[in-house]
Length: 382
Image 1: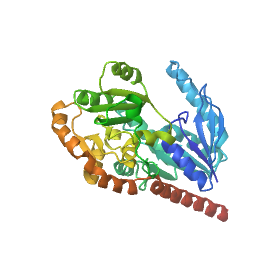
Image 2: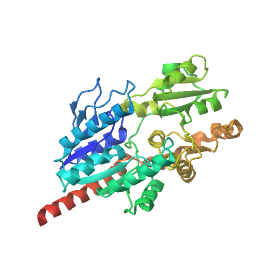
Image 3: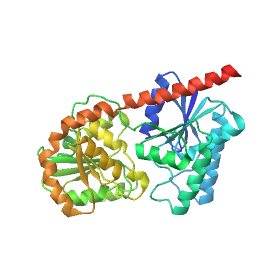
Image 4: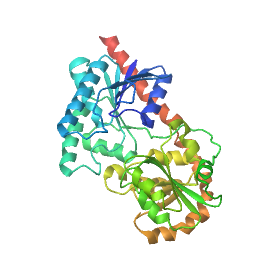
């Protein structure tokens, strides 16, 4: 069966889509990731278990008008629709790609199967106005009529989709890493000449505002024998680099490729995941960095978002800061962190056994097996 894994990005750093594509490819599906192109990327790539096909899109390094962006999006949709209309399955990642599935299923290939993979609560993001949310809910509800299976990333999001759209319970597939045994590395100490006695705190991921990245630096900057590593890419990069020029315990590293990421992660002592509580999507989220920290044995400091807080309290693998702007709260918690973080190891080992990609892959392949069976039964009755 031919599977089009549709993403509205250039597919250069999308770990979830990469893992899904490899898992499906290994299982015998012919997988192509359909993405948009940019000047520095090839329009076609062939890998061991999947291919990449990129179609023209806006050059995001240049500022464009809303009409230009809309025109580029429509062009991307048209080229993608033309290419994937004879595939067997369309795996749509996020709401942006669902129009492709609608057009293909409605006008070209009524037998095609559609999987909707909602990487977050698509209509409950912090930058969306109330009007935006209402419109997007209507749009999502309309397109879901043409979807065969829904996947999402946390139980509260799945439950909300059931209530909102009266659909069956979505399949939960967490964005977890492969379970691997990693020998703890010391890359950060060696690279930045950090003293052995320092406890290294690590934030890894997108460098966007409101994710608590610089707020955590304010909390930690005056603590003795601590170092804070920020590793990733995004709009805060230049501001962080400027801070590192004068900060005594702050260090920056560009994002690294997925195949070596956990080596770097293991070089820290404690992971940081403290987004602000600005929207339901973040309040319900279990970010991939949470599982990456656990896979290499790191306890995690999280903010008081409901799903993060539940995960930490249930698994006893870290610490909760209810208010990431409250220095007094952190000062009270800090001695406990220093004294007990090494005691979290047994709890983290249990997380590694449960929350790994091998377990998530089983659910993905079961879902696809069901789709395959349905398609074969339809063919047999024709």
